[in-house]
Image 1 (cartoon, rainbow, N blue to C red):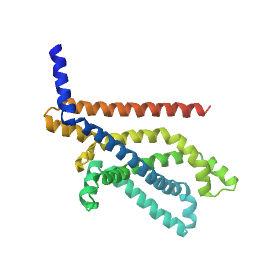
Image 2 (cartoon, helix red, strand yellow):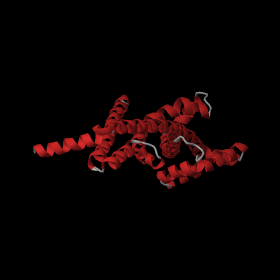
Image 3 (spheres, rainbow, N blue to C red):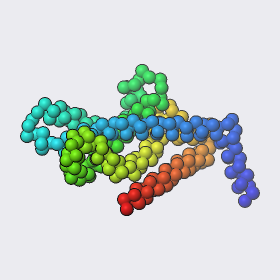
Image 4 (cartoon, helix red, strand yellow):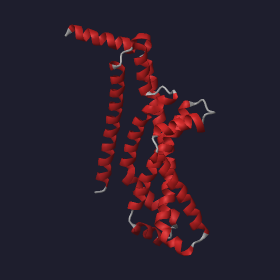
Amino acid sequence: MKEWFQEISDEFVLNFIKDNRWEWIVEGLKNTLIITFFATLIGIAIGIIIATVRSTYDKNYETMKKHKSLGFYVLSFFNFVCKLYLTVIRGTPVVVQLLIMYFIILSFSNDEATIAIITFGINSGAYVAEIFRSGVMSIDKGQFEAGRSLGFNYIQTMIFIVVPQMFKIVLPTLCNEFIVLLKETSIAGYVGIVDLTKAGDLIRGRTFSAFMPLIAVAIIYLVLVMLFTWLVGKLERRLRNSDH
């Protein structure tokens, strides 16, 4: 038993203490959280815009189709663009999107972190858009009629009546999307970013010991996911309690 503990201790020192290799883990964790946070903000912004276009088109299609005004054709065009975006982004792997963004679209940039943030933000936006759209579509039509009876136009009804209810419905799912995005950033190392996964792989490459660094990375991811899952659970319980 004593020899086993000594072996584990030697492995720990070799992988994390020697040459301050633990700093790679800290740097990787910091980069992972930064990329996840800002990509989430971009995803929410894109999701709001696309969900607004698509839900507006779906809810007003029959009415606008009868008049065939300029607004109908403009909205139809933007709805088509949004559906094309959703099809392409959700139909291709995020790692391929990251490589295309790094080697083709933003090949002139040397800021790998910004490229990763933009890529993951665009990818997340496609899923956030459908989360928001489903939330808007789940709101009873009577809420829209209530807004009209108060003298609100469509935009005011969306802002003051529909959106607050929609956020309450989709907030737990939106938080789960954040958790998924956190794990998806583990591929950021493909473009040279020292994220959490890349940090573990760098240590493995220096020490030729795979168990300790990779298990440590897995544990950190697990702890982060468990923490955010716990917070989402508390949020869901609080939202349920507020309904009573």
